[in-house]
Length: 260
Ligand SMILES: NS(=O)(=O)c1cccc(F)c1
Ligand SMILES: [Zn+2]
Image (cartoon, rainbow, N blue to C red; front, side, top):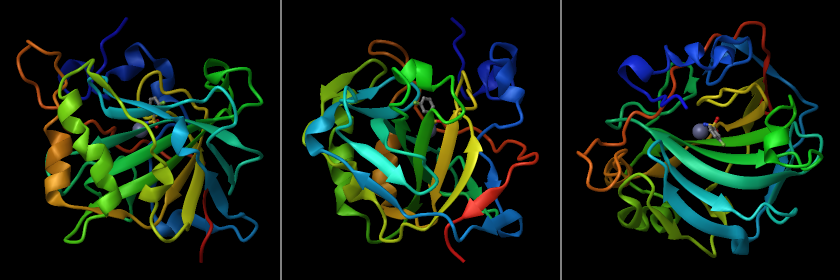
């Protein structure tokens, strides 16, 4: 098992040694620049129908803060947009920086946001999640930028209140009765393209749906995320920050926009 990470010898530039697809032609994240984007008027709006009862636990896996959901049936689903059918919500997690001026994975016209929220869904036409990650249309990730501002979104509080219970790697706490769609921005405008997991094993199985409108969080809320540690309890403290992958070559991929 190869302990990949985000810095030094196990950082993003070394992942390809154990995960060769990290140097593939469909890697994520990418830069989204207006000059490369194609407005596709046939793109449908997307819809999330989430059951708050599907939320189960929140955990610190040493790489991010993740909330997992019951995905044993079509209980919380994403559909529409570029997707051929419904995709089941499995988990959400975050990427963030060591300061407010960076931390997102996708970069829009040169703009880096303080962080990025990913809601991961898998295609139930495949028998299970692990089968879906081996398929080009297996996974759909809804990505939402976190922008630091004065009037933070109160809905973020629920997640950040739990941070104290999962300070170190391996810590997990119950996290129930939570509908993540309360975190969504007003506009559903999005970019979409075919890419990969932004962490090892970097499989190229993701239909990315990146929302144009960021959600506003406070600097204190970002500091809360940065108070997480990537070490386990009783190990030397290593702040969990800068868990983002640099942008990858777009090659010949089209980035489509749902808006003009
Ligand atoms: N950052 S991401 O590509 O959404 C991702 C990485 C690893 C696991 C996962 F389920 C999702
Ligand atoms: Zn992610």
